[in-house]
Image 1 (cartoon, rainbow, N blue to C red):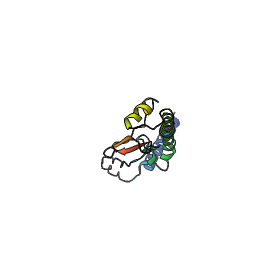
Image 2: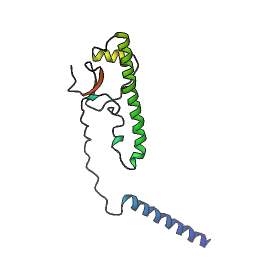
Image 3: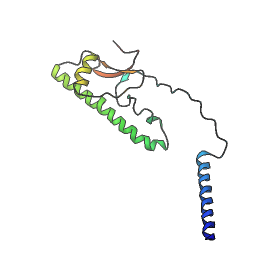
Image 4: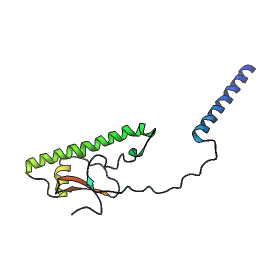
Length: 153
């Protein structure tokens, strides 16, 4: 029985030593660094651009990862990008083509675009980052993203 207790104690000490080594490896053995100062995240600058995959709020932080984190975030960002592409670059242009074929013209206003293209086809536009809004560019016949204080009238 005594031999079993000695072996058990050695195994226990070995496990604790292994755990401590792992902690030193992952956390570092030196003094703890002070926590980073809490700063408010900067909102990305919104630039007027055609609404294409990647303008949506969802998935923007995933694109910032690199190295090991990219292994996980890469496929997730790709999935989000494909969903945005399906709506913004496939479904909306197709709906605009159908509208133009039946009406003989493009929508005359942003409100008409939202009603006859987005609502009629039950499309859900990707959520935009703070400070950005969708607006149908009637001159180009395309959906654009603008800073909310620079939307053309």
